[in-house]
Image (cartoon, rainbow, N blue to C red; front, side):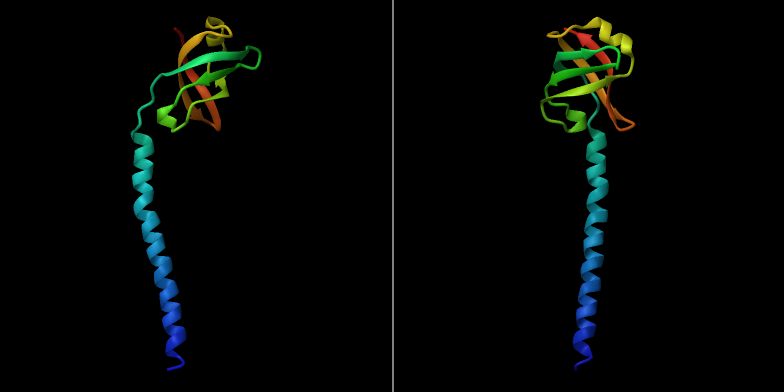
Length: 112
């Protein structure tokens, strides 16, 4: 009887680990699919600062749905620095942003 209790405890721990792993395995693909299902689209924003030399701009923006990002003000890298010549501080814009190589990169910038 004394040997049965440790065996039951070990079995319970093993089953607990197994089931928690299954739950993660079952939910992870669905979550991954949900993230990929949001198609990138243009987001409304306002130019707050431009650093042409560094190829960066600060935008106050609305929700970026495909990145699950709430409205905020943040710095972005311009994929092509020449995009920055089309806008000035205070301009209302629509822009496309992607997450690439650890950076939030603007790939399209359209003055409104």
